[in-house]
Length: 229
Image (cartoon, rainbow, N blue to C red):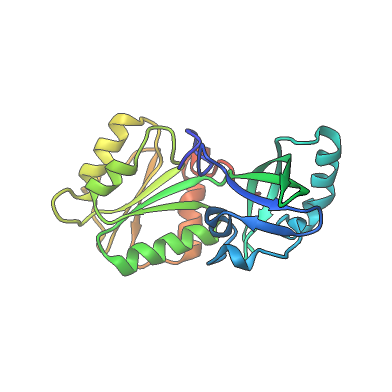
């Protein structure tokens, strides 16, 4: 589910079909990308509804200039969060009518959140999403290692105290595979024994969205690559 870089959700883009005026079909992953529970919620909507209002003229110009694209724009989720997208469009026949198949890639930076506590893990993932990240969550170091590919994540946030393999061990393994990976280590305690460098920070739990934003801003630019500024 990644482009192989620090932003993006996949080699297989999400898709929708519109008849020139409204969306007539879309994939579940497109609905999820834009913050909806079901594809049915997008049916009947205008395609430009999902482009940030101030970016719509640019999107129209891009469509007129290069037809099918791809072109980059800024999408807007149901909760108002804006994120970078890549869009291409192709003329197709659909139910005997001429329509356009639109393919959409999420270019948001990707964050991997690792915590064995379900509540903390999901809340932390939500904070990242509110900051404009595409989030993968893992309940253990073993699960995180199954998801991880070098170069695919902008940042990893892991709890330190976890069973079997703790966050420091996980960070060491990830860093061996990806030398410049930005890592946030979180703990309920101030632990001076945690090894830190220019690519890592220690976060004290509990923390809020402002604390997370400040920690990310203190990391190298890779941790924020793809974010709107």
